[in-house]
Image (cartoon, rainbow, N blue to C red):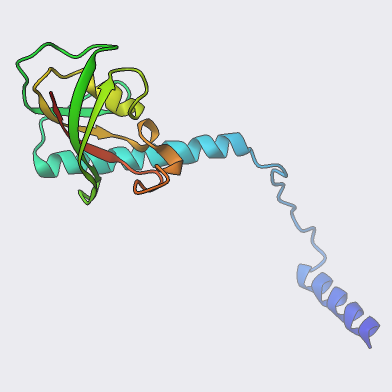
Length: 167
């Protein structure tokens, strides 16, 4: 019975082709994983950039975009010296996600600028400010905690908004 069913299935398949050659579509057997990852990363970065642009436009923030994608909006310019590499400063900040939902509130730290004591994007943004400044620094995920988050409250791939005051 099984043999009869198999023969019938093969015969009907051949009959459906009408004796014509069926074209074979060649596909790449090994996907180019590196290229796919690059394209996925490019897409995610562009989508994040669009979200940041919309946030800035909606809130009418007069920001400056740095080469690494970090945005700085100094809404109260400090009267002190401009921050520079290895300068010791005290900062107070609140941290929000791009949705403006608070992640951390009223954090105080003493840090050395440029010494990886904060996420790279924040370090970059700080070097655009002066002592006494108040600013919003928007840090794309790749310049913040990235794909891992902070293991506590910062989610994976989070765009971060630091509302910061420098003393």
